[in-house]
Amino acid sequence: FQPKTLLGQHVLVSAGPTFEAIDPVRGITNKSSGKMGFAIARAAREAGAEVTLVAGPVTLPTPRGVRRVDVASAQDMLLAVEAAVPQATVFVATAAVADWRPANAATQKIKKDGSGQVPALAFEENPDILARVAASERARSGALFCVGFAAESHDLAHHAKVKRERKGVPLLVGNIGPATFGQDENALLLVDAEGTRELPQAGKLALARQLVSEIAQRLPR
Ligand code: C5P
Figure 1 (cartoon, protein in one colour):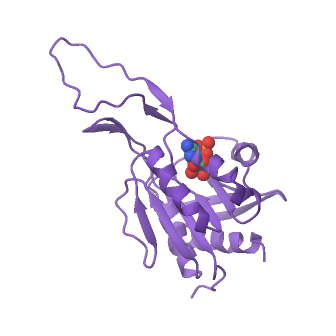
Figure 2: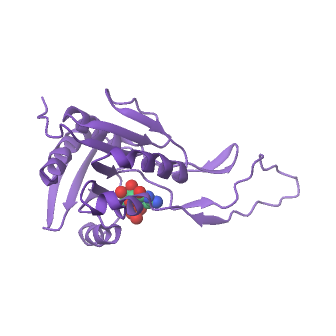
Figure 3: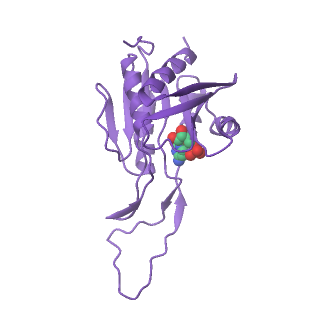
């Protein structure tokens, strides 16, 4: 049983990797499984919220009662997130958004021409979805509470604090442990203006439920 701590709230979650096309049959992605974001969407729904889950390419079932929007690229994810922001009261950004996308993706499959020449990939920067949403009027006015995630290989507490300020979010959640991608368990470090708090290692759904209650406590009432 989950207490309905998010009744009346609309939680928007971004989850999974993004897929950045090189040509119609190739692209660049990363190893995010989407499990943490899907667990948060489920926990938020259980807590009584309306939930919109914007998901990159993952192979996970949609949590019951959750509205899911599937996207591929970071630019598509930004559009889907921005479309949901006006209704949302909480945004939890768990997606592992690609930092760069191939510049000028080819509209036709790039062919091997037999000469041994390899294609040169050039990149351009993707939008920072969380930073943009956190800078929006809705977030700045307090109508939308933004939560960011950080996966760092070392010095998590320091990087998480710096990232919280750089992204302009009230709550930043660090993944403790080097390889949480694809794992069923995790441990989290919560960083807010008051300080830090650790949620010790547990299954991702258990952690998601704890995180949801931490978020609920921080919402304006
Ligand atoms: O800067 P970094 O990628 O480490 O920030 C991680 C946080 O920012 C996560 O919450 C992630 O979902 C979000 N993010 C985003 N758009 C990006 C990059 C990161 O929303 N382009």
